[in-house]
Image 1 (cartoon, rainbow, N blue to C red):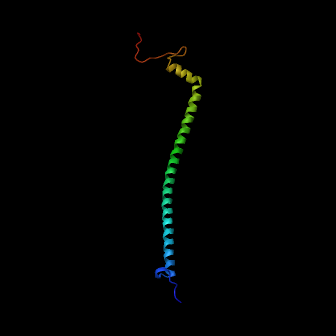
Image 2: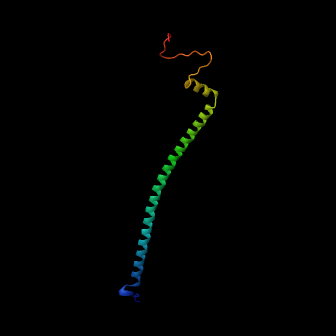
Image 3: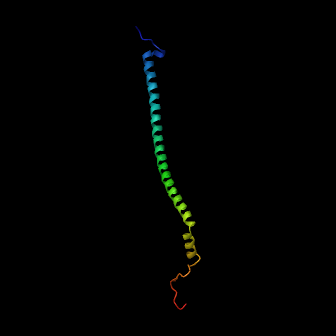
Length: 108
């Protein structure tokens, strides 16, 4: 039996091989594209994970700062804080308390 001849003298087997090569090339092209996109996505994921870790650390710092502020608010509501402010800013003293000042002589 003779092989069936296609256009311009090519056999059916040659067309099948050519079609198989074209399909293989297209599949390899898609595979290469997918691998490149996969690497790009892995790089993005790594940068997002690093950013997430940095934000988690910052969140913990802000939580600690919030706790410090809350503790300071509670302290500011105490009598001890009012007394401290009266001493430092207003120069007030308790009754019977002796005050020593730097640089002052007894004659003054």
